[in-house]
Length: 200
Image (cartoon, rainbow, N blue to C red; front, side, top):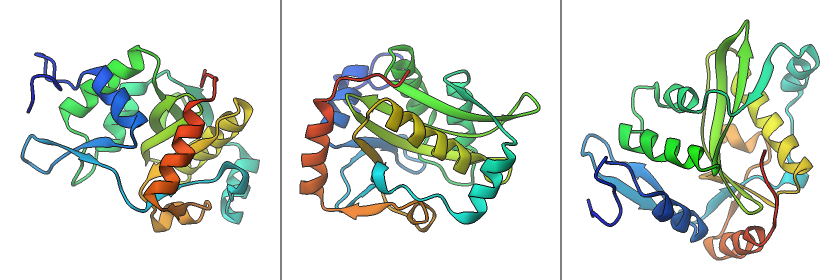
């Protein structure tokens, strides 16, 4: 671990994180080694906002509207919900690092609540017109999916240009996630970073 990357308190310096995202990279904690790896996948997972697809079953859930949506009211709790699994790349250092970005206004959470209990959500980083989705979790059926729908709605409202999912997965493909070559992703990223907007 480099002292130029980490503070004495053990979290990644915010300036390092922001520069990494601007350059198309992001960190993940490596399994059981206490080390941070930096990644720039090729291809990269991207959900085109204009082609976002809502599966039929999820449309029924949205019509029932069972969840309350909140923004940025339980950021650290969302991160811990995302890390609550058998294997996770979200270490304590990662949590502390992103909480610092949250305090600076770069990190955000979209939360689903039921009966005043946090039951799902997602978090990510917003820089310029780009939103870098980090992770999501669900304790109730469709809770994280509804959070994703609300994220896309907010991004459209705020005129964001890029929704980065890092990697593509079978789960994300149902929403229209695409594999984009790194060079094309970086071109899209550079364009999105020029956009002046705000997530909140």
